Image (cartoon, rainbow, N blue to C red; front, side):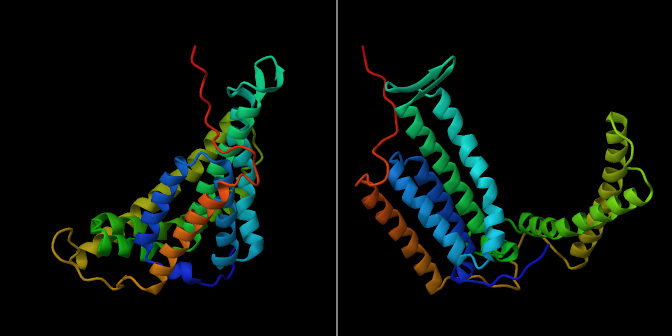
Length: 268
C-alpha cells in the first residue's frame, strides 16, 4: 500500500544532526524520573509526529496502534510485581502498590517516547540523505554506507519477489497441506529462490561498483551535498524548548501526584 506524503521542515534537517540529537534525547529520557515531565514529552512528541511528519493522519494512527500494546506490555510487569510500601491490591504473587503503579506508568511512557521519536525520525529522514550526511559530516566509511543504501533499495524488490512466489504457491494448490512437513516445504519453497536471487543481484552490484572504479580509500566526490541551514537551528531550538518547558511544567505535578518514581528501601 502506497500513499502520498509531503515534506516538512523536519525533512530538511541535517540527518546526522537529527540522529545525534535523537540519540542524546533518548539518553536524557532514561535519566528522567519525574512522570509529569515524561508525560509532557510524550504529548509534545505526538504533536510533532502528527503535525510535522507530513504523513496522512490515518496512516499515522495505524503506525501508532502498536504503541498501545508496547505501553501495556512495558508497564504491566512493573505494576503487578514491583516493590512498594503502600499496597493497593495483593493476590498470590501479584502485588500492586502505589509506588509500583506510578513506576509502571513511567516505564510505559518512556518506551512510548522511544517509539514515537524513532518513528518520527524514520518518517522524516530519507535513507539516501542520511547515509550521504553520515559520510560527509561524520566520516562514515563509504563502503559501509553504499552497502547499506544498496541493501535498503533491495528490500522492496525482495518483497515483490516474495509476493510473486506466494501467488505461484497458491496457483499450484500447495497451500492445502497443514502441519510441520507443510511448513518445511514452504520454508524451502520461499527461502531458496529468494536467497538465490539476492546472491545474484549482489554479484551484479559488486561488478557494477568495480566497473565504476569504486574504492574504499582516497577522497571521494558525492552526487548529493548535505550541509547545514536554518532548519537545523530551528530544530535544535524546538528540542531545547521541548526539554526546558517539559522539565519546568513537570515540576508543578499538575498531572501525576508524584515527582520521582524511584523506590528507595528504608534502611534498617
